[in-house]
Length: 193
Image 1: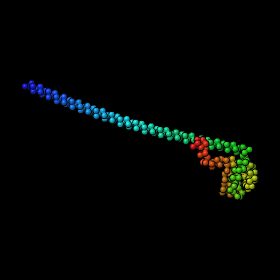
Image 2: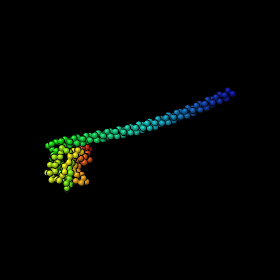
Image 3: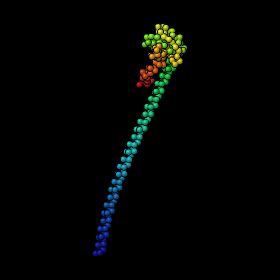
Image 4: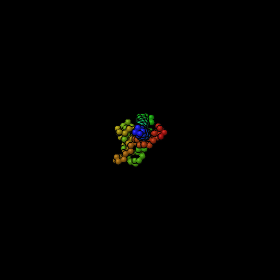
């Protein structure tokens, strides 16, 4: 009977051991599944975060590149517009040196500049243009004293005798006064903006 009791106890112990082992295996399997699921979730979250950071960096880089392109484009456009005005100034200088066309232009510049004055005026012009300006003043019926001036080129400066009022009417000063209006026209011709 003692041996049967021992056999019974051993079977019960073996069954208990199997039950505990089975529970331990099931628990280990659940823990492993939970751990794997948690690891996958963390990995997926990390991937999403990295993807978001990469996308944000790409958007920043794209924005920076767009700003640089826009800046270079504007700088190039400014240089081209400046070149157009530089060439226009060169053409005006050539006009001022053209003995066939310049005297009539100079006469018109004098007429426009003197139109607001109703008494004797002082006209300043380049030394080489003094005789032409004197002749134009006589033709226009102006009472004018014509003086050479080294700082006037391609036109005239007309002042009242007392010096209170001055009108500068040179080819370059006219271009400078028209620059703001011409900027949009030049841009339209160059780029159709």
